[in-house]
Image 1: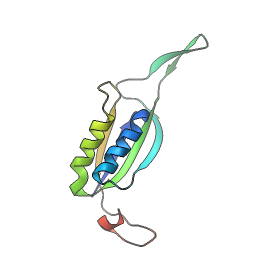
Image 2: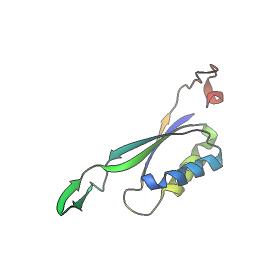
Image 3: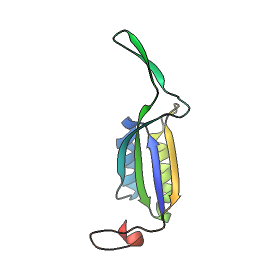
Image 4: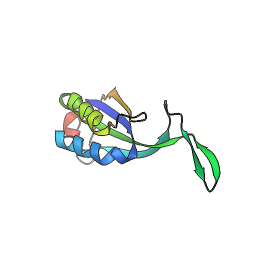
Length: 112
């Protein structure tokens, strides 16, 4: 099992969720986050005053993925979140040693 974390643009969230659901990923956790990468923020003008937005709004998606769905899940995220512009995001993959469903006590892939 793997733990996949993707940081994407907020308006691409529904596209990514639909793509993951279509390949059989049953559950994800979504968190609104802020950050910057190569974009390093931008400047905006509000009521005539210019200010720097250093941390841009992003969405973090986390999901426990069975090994057989890992490559399709990464491809689904990549395709659904891609705009071709800087700031599209990143996908991180971690080994997942154990998972347990609290309600039933199931462990391993059955708990996903």
